[in-house]
Length: 91
Image (cartoon, rainbow, N blue to C red):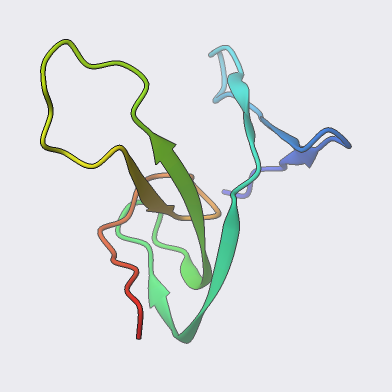
């Protein structure tokens, strides 16, 4: 099953919905893409990944004094957009 994804000039990605469901709202392009040394399999959609996407997270609201960092990054599959268990480090 292959999906078509349209990318507009303003950087938004249109994802068509499944049959009978409303389309998924558009999302922004990833902040960065990383090429993997070896292809791996996405645990969600099963596609072979040679590239992963990285999106920055910013804490926008908290109702208590938080010891968690204010910023972070999420790594996702470029095909299904699901968050992957992965890590970025300075090496």
